[in-house]
Image (cartoon, rainbow over all chains, first blue to last red; front, top):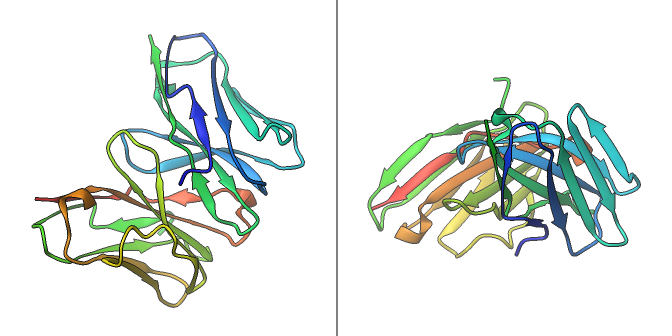
Length: 110
Length: 114
């Protein structure tokens, strides 16, 4: 079964707009990670936020974590056509096992 | 190599045949993961290795699936008597034992059972 669930499942925006994706999970975690996948092959690690952190930035990416609500959000600012991809959240439980959600398919129109 | 290497990249097999998928993790990574992804879907967890041992095999779909890892490095995922529903992309990832640095993925093996 999946630990994380992303919302929305699909998102279409215009270039330059911001994209926000949400992730909810069920059990306690060590950290939460976001990955990107192009063309249904290998995933690329984007950013990791530890359970004792609330917000983290990396370039145009901003991640928040609310452990009381068991949720996280990924914000991509000033989106580009090249940001078109599927985005997945993954939770790392205390056993160091990574469990992924179903993903959000982002389409950025030029 | 610099990244996680999976082979073959594509495999077409006849229903009922056995297949073996290989994953070569990044050197020094003690954790290794296998996932399965059907078209347009999320990642389904299969199995996780820490060193040569597999603390969690709960994701293996049936007893036709098995995996091993030798020398704390290369891992093979074997599917016996393949069925059409086994068709998917099989993804391997590796990381240091402390996953607070994220995991690195291979490009996957696309398995098609005809």
